[in-house]
Each structure stands twice: as C-alpha cells, then as structure tokens.
Image (cartoon, rainbow, N blue to C red; front, side):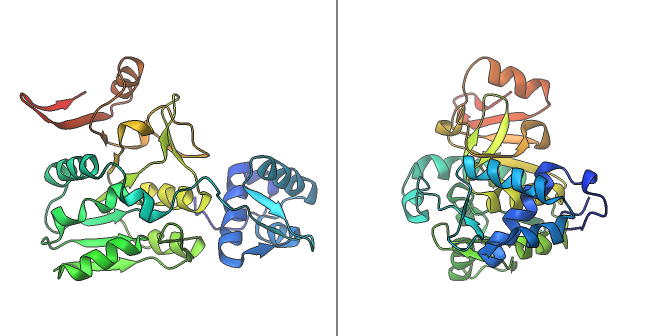
Length: 275
C-alpha cells in the first residue's frame, strides 16, 4: 500500500497510517491544522482530535498558541556529533563484518541516518555501488574518498541535530527505487523483538526502506537491546540479520532463531558466532 495515498473511506485508514501522515505534514510544513489532516486522510474531526490527544500525551506533538499543531522537540535526543564519539571501536568492528559478509560490487544500498551505519563507509568507499541515503554525513565522507560509485540523496526536511533529511519527500524518493540491501541502525530493540526509533520521521523512512529492499540487516550496539524507545518501525522477522558485538542471553536468541533471523558477532577464535 502506498504510504501517501488519500483514503476515500476513513475506515480504511489505520491509526498508524494517520499518524504517519501527520508526521509527514509536520516535517514538511512545521505547523499544520486539523483541516490539513482531514484533507489528507478523510478521517472525521473527532478521530483526528483523539489522534492528536494521544500523540500529545506521548510528547510527540504540541498545540501552538494559534491553535495549530507542531512537532515537540526531542530534548533527550543526543546530537549527531555526540553519537559519533560513542562506541567508535565497536561500530567499526560490526561495520567491517557487515561489509565483508553482505556487500558486493554493483549493489544498490539504502543506508539510514545512524552513526553506526556511517561506520561502514571506509570499508566500501572503493567499491562501485549505488548508495541511496538520507544521511548527509555519509555523502560528505563518500565525496572526500573519491567514491567510484553513484550517490543519491533523498530530499526532505533537514534535521540539524541528526544531519539527516526526512519527511514525505524522502519517502517518495525511496519509493522510486528497489535496493539489493538496506542497512539500518536502531535506537532500541525491545523485549518484544520490536525495532525502535525515537524520531517519527526517521522511523517512517526506515520502514519504507525495508519495504523497498530485497534484504535488510540491522547494526546495533549491545546497549540497544531491551531498550523500548518511542516508535516501532519493524520487528525482527522483517530483517535477515542483526549484527552486534554481543547479544543478550536466553530468550532473545531463542526468539531470533524462531523468526529465522541470523545473529552475528565479530570473529572469535573459532570464527563468527551465529545463531
């Protein structure tokens, strides 16, 4: 189902579909009114009011003084520069493993805006690949390395705190392509095996990348596990593999195995650890 179609029957628009449209409108216009949402979803005003009340209670949106609606600021979100300095060695290790096992010359890749995914660039900078990303730091690093492949940047709303672009324009860009492989970072992996993201625009774009990719892998540092962040964009069953420096014991590994997801750790003395 196309993410941006208008619904002729409000009953066909799920709550999550409406929420995605609200986030898209806010990313593109910054301030919107209930009439804007109704025009895009054909939902009843009472339904939209309930959506807004729920999103407000979760700290995602807020009312303006003039009765409009705007995105709440993400006070707990670290800046891109701060995140770049965290777990540098661990990110490089899992990025090297991902590039060695999953990337081959000639591929089309979707790369998201995470700093963990950015760590993969030095390992693929000399390969002829088509890279499609919303991560402006990735584009800058590829340019400096004289990358021999093709680089495509999504359009969209610029997030200065993350150095990414998101929103409806970014999703439309991704919709035009089919990737061989999507590589994503996560804000958290919940105890219910959900893949989590803090920002709605980033969550939506990750979801669209998965939908338009033949294969998807996740790169995540150990601190991300059992972390219930704000929004779910997928579950473990939607991806082929999850790569980390180590995994939580017991139920997590069992659940991943049951869903056919490969868990991969860096090489030990006996080789890569897989579940």
